[in-house]
Length: 536
Image (cartoon, rainbow, N blue to C red; front, side):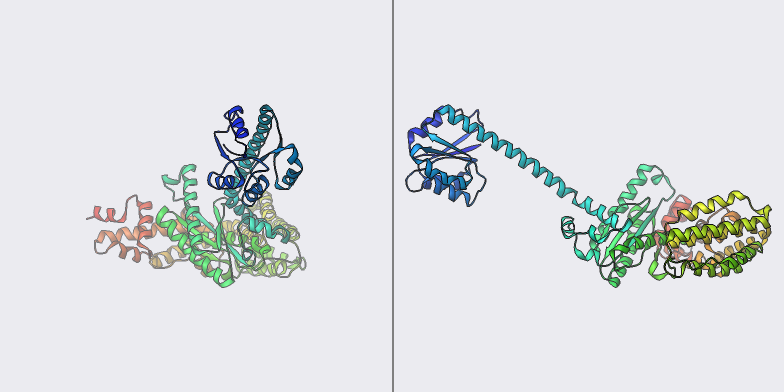
């Protein structure tokens, strides 16, 4: 610590230097001056931590010196040495934030006591400053985490207008256009089934790597944030004008799927929610993006589903209880008339969800009543096909549906399962014909774009139902069956030794040779090149 000692009386200066225990007080350098002008020059050059000055001195007095210093340093501790006759003049120092006044003559022990008190105050002030500086530093470092939590809450739980004050927005380094329109997309990566993601620790590392990839891509595209995982789904919030944001969402989706496939050798899907102008609707977009992920799972991997491009809608009102339609639906179930069941349910669905007004909770209550009636009526007519224990899981799934769209999907699934229970008894031959149709279609079209949704549509079945009977008959889900079929055809083509690997990839339905190689190696255990060499 440095002290600047200013007095035109050399004896006073000498006495202070020689009698006070400066080292004990923590002073390791004493700078002296004999008037205010000299002291001002040394202050600017040496930047002392403490000033001790007389008042009356030639050229520039002590008060003028303090005034000059206060213009550049308002906090420097100052001790004034004032004679008895000068004390009234020294009162002006009150306005200059002077720490202590020492009246001449004083014994040096008294001066040292005052010095020690001032220095202790300086140390306390320094510790406080260090403490608050540390807090400020920690706060600055935590802003990205706080901002992520804020945005995460906004797209999941939702926020009110009073939750987003200007000061909070500035503190989180956000801009107002974040709240002027946006959408949420969700990324889902899939374990590839081999050893590298078998351990939970390794799987979490891959998820973290995918998160870093998402952060880099979103930062490059701008106007967006990759947030934190919800289970294995990574939400990404984008904001801006509708068309620009939707276009950016598409570009980010393709970049994510490509980069994760290239660098992590993992498959991924992306669901995109609708764009909403009001920030209070962002949770709806988030839920839609998760619903899109659920829909795309039937198509396999490396797909993007956009809610803006679907014809789905969200339910909002209950008009009346459709007693007659429910009776007709029960009869159609007993006949295992899938077309009639679909037609009756479509009419009920329009009545339940088309108009605005009723809450989701109220609609759930009516759906529980409806399904209970259908199941109990059907059991009464066909007890051999049903067990009353089927009812409880159905009702639990209805109650747990988080949105109107998911509630509709649950009801459709329940109706499919009811049909399946009856068809297991009456329609096993018909089911096998569906599976044979799918197998035949794969055999004839494996080299192109094979859509499971289209197959279900062609057969006038739901994807849930077709997926269920296909797995029951073959032991495989559709994606695994299609992949295995394509790989077997590829192996046959390799045996001919007439084609390059990229040609074979295209011939069996893979437009990306790198992706084909990865799928082949996962299925066979070696790369296509190694397999082809082994067959020469």
